[in-house]
Length: 366
Image 1: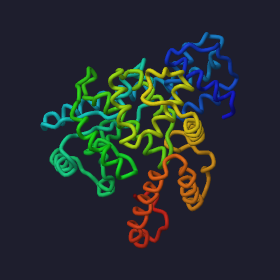
Image 2: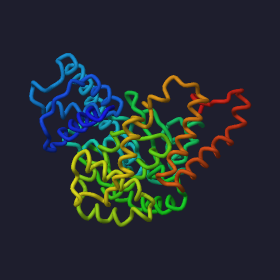
Image 3: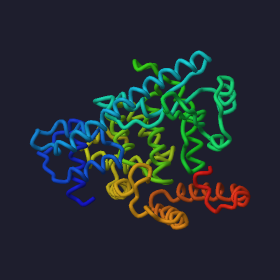
Image 4: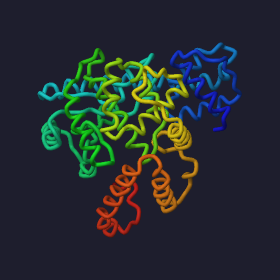
């Protein structure tokens, strides 16, 4: 994406959220459409397009295609809301407190609650790992050994093919074990403050959302990459947060190991939407912000669209992943080292399985 295309793309993001913008004119609609799909923000960009004068909108065929995709996004959001409400009632009947951590909880805060590209449902259930797993078995859910390898959630198959993650921890946490201990103590306490919303499910406090989703962004940024979808989510949270929420979260960032990512995101928010300093949780860092935004644009949502990785043999991809971690050292040295150590711990753990299956790569197996 060249400089002009970046400006076009960000201009649509600004218009989608009602930020005053210059008159938009671009011949790169096909490219902008594919980029919106890559970043999983097609519905948000479409909302910006609908605010443009008719003469400045995409060609009719592309507009029809885009509108069709947005209708699918809308339908999926409605399915997720219904499933989240159903699961909430299901666990409430078992005497368990729940909270939708992201997804539908974020979507309801958007100017149009159906514009966000929906994914899965992340549902926290109170009680801790052993208690929650025992409850799921009692409720008739089958949990594979593969899904038990993740230490903070298990996968369930919801209705209509919706993927549900049942969380017994409120977050995947930080890679740094020291800041992670403080982070988890805070989140475990704050997750108890849940609220039932009109959509039929429960959501955590805004302070919880700001801290947990910032740690989620940092976690995935270091491991595989993030997309603009996560950035837009965080922008929406900041716009909805109260001054007290932002002030309280700001005081926690350093001790929870989230200052670097927080300051980088604040610069991105300022660059794209002109976010006012009064709505930020820390001072923006232009140097780190530019690097993070550049990686977001090149790697796409969770690193799935990195052009340099396409068509490569798994060993080349493995080498590139290791090289990526080395290049990430500038961001947070301790977190990067801990992240890489976690990888090697898992790597050696599965050596017996590799020998048993006579495979070097376990992709698609675990």
